[in-house]
Length: 134
Image (cartoon, rainbow, N blue to C red; front, top):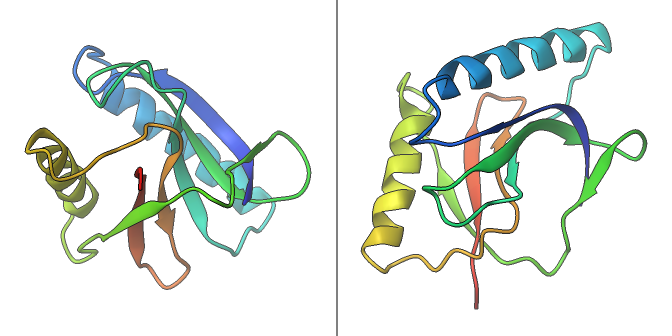
């Protein structure tokens, strides 16, 4: 899968006091860019370049399916566990990430920390794809 990068930040969930502001600003800027080009497909929140585990620094990008511009290629053989987000909750994405982190802490999710992504579908559905081993 080739994803065209629209906007990117580097942050940390636990040690960056501006994390929420950075993420919010990144999405606002990316949304403006996508509106300009009249993008009508799915949008991705792509997590990669992990420093370590979920407690370390990582890169987050807004991306779309693409074949030109700055692309990141996710290997086809990557295995994912998919989590469906409750889109009726304003905290749905946050709650799903908390579920993912708990599963990992409890030893029930073996993440590879390569490429994870949130996929925002045209119909409003959201899924989180977590790269796993095996």
